[in-house]
Length: 348
Image (cartoon, rainbow, N blue to C red):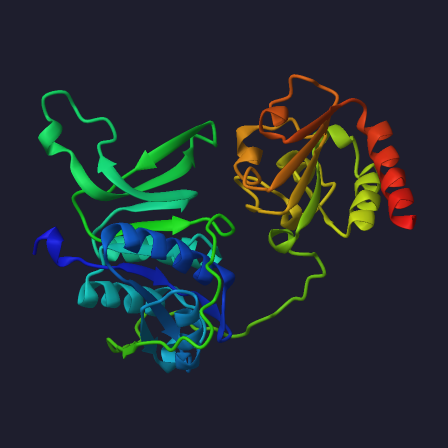
């Protein structure tokens, strides 16, 4: 079967406990852009048990169609039945593009599905666009350049370079996408889903794990991906105790404290607060980078902030290259002074 038989942009709409994950809406937003360039439509794939009621919500965020795979075997996420469900949808409906969130579930599911449908997978993408491949055609072979390919960009070699990857000879073109990178659209209130119910059948075998117990732990840590103002500290803050300065500044601004990888490695703050390639991607209105040098791995997680304010004693620190405002000096003097000035301003 030729590649031309594959049509449409599909999104795996992750749900947990019958609640859609935010990454599903982000992927639908990007899928709308890709589908527009390809003159095609967007389909969400919803997998679970008793999940059909979530379909209209997906329509509100851009899904033209929703394929629902509903079966008691899919009540909780398990690798084998979910892989069978999504791979069966791909083999039956033949999407040109298949997007999966790079969540804990997506990182487990995506590679297994791609292997089962015999296609490639680009993991942890930060940019997706439609274009020509190769990017620079070989001289004398310009006619071999393929058009309307999914160009998938991701950090490579520990974040020290950026790679753009395509899958020109197999379908679907598959990518897992880092949460927080893509923008969801404004919801279309009252949109109703065009639902397609599909069930490939599930026969438990020795690949089906048995879930004995589910333990849910509540965390008090704030979700930095939802914060509008982030006060982020790096190795230059010096110690866990010195982060109190940043917490005081965040409290005045109504913001949240976050950090770089070095801070987590030193045990000063938990990993949930880490921004960067191996942490979380954030898009706050204001991002304070305090004592952060600005390694590419960190910048990849925060460069889409509306306003970036950098405070660092090293005037040559790379963070100043992406900052909208920069202050060169001792953070131990600058941060408390800024906090007091803001307190005084708000008191007037």
